[in-house]
Length: 189
Length: 368
Image 1 (cartoon, rainbow over the protein chains, first blue to last red):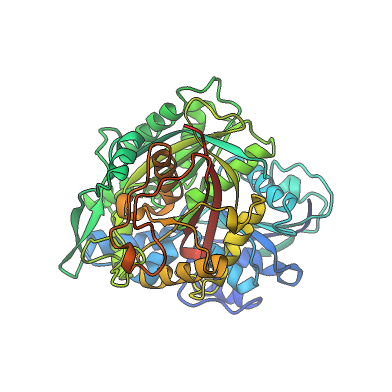
Image 2: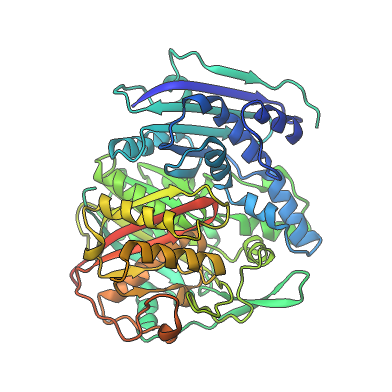
């Protein structure tokens, strides 16, 4: 298993969903009425679009649930005493992000969402290695959406070429690669 | 995959405080009594299958559950991987604070890793992570934890799954119109009217040895994403059929080897049709007996992959499964008479969920 591409995207807390959507639109048509975690995940995945095979596995992680969505749901249910809006509720299911990434990028392999912890990249690689070893996937796309304020989305694409790397962090896994970087500097929200 | 043993199962659910209570009630065909709650705006009520109350905070409750599951295990536990499966996690605690008037702020929303990391540190485990793939969370947790043990990455794994009585889920499913107004939970019935949510807390050990209280061996499984729709799978059953076939292949068995299918059976309109079609594609006219467990446990969402697996495995070791009282009306062949199986029968267990996640597990019961 070898890392073949890496991406890092950063943006300020004030960056609007509209701006994120515009960045996503540079690669794929953004889905409608989705939340920030979904947009960030799409932004992390989209640069790899030309490289992806149909049997790519998708392994997505985030530090937190999408907090703006959580706030909307809590406001509806506990402050306004209403039913939540159906799409906001569905978006709050964490793996909704994985669904949209898989749909927009046309990948059909396993699609897992895990809570990002201190050993995230090692766990990502352990899980992806299982699917590679069993021939379930020939590629693995690992995406970590970190920090809900000043966001950072780090992504790696791995294939089944023999190779080893220190999986302790994004930095060690992407060592020696030309990391595709995007910095969203405008805070318009 | 190399078969991995499941043992030391623990379950607290609407069927009782223990797995033994739950399987005894299930074998008697005793359905639990539902509580009813108000749906916002509509002035209607929906049923909920609550577990016996615990006096502990969620964190302490989960630690007690983990320690119960680990009780017969040799320590230290630094070779044990923990995988937590849940969709609600600690959202109930956040809800309680907002319900008391605390305005939302970011610190109310805790990290997705918090509960797993806390248990890892307090129990001295080798590692821990949270799996969140909607209603397939626990099925995926079992599948990946089992494969990690089989690969030698960890010697043992502890899989924990739970769903709390979370208002966002209880109201959210109401907003989607998926909850049963009658509270009569009847998967695959032509007049089914939706699902009933349930509360559950469960845990199981996985290892290469059968442990003190063996339940089954995990022989294989498969999980993949159907990207056709966020909340339903392809109605023709083709994706479900493909996932079940891949699961059977991974276990090196065929559909003819399967003695029982544990259906996902949400009792929602589209999903039961899709699963029926998937079953017909895979088994054609040779469908083995099938059972549904959600009428007993409720739909325990991210925990159903483990809560239903434990209930089924424990019950199968003790006696014939109870019949489904509407089997002659059902859309596909459910057991209409008590169903006894050999202890080492092969089981196919289905779990499908939001986000296009479809998963099937292949299990083999353990000798009593």
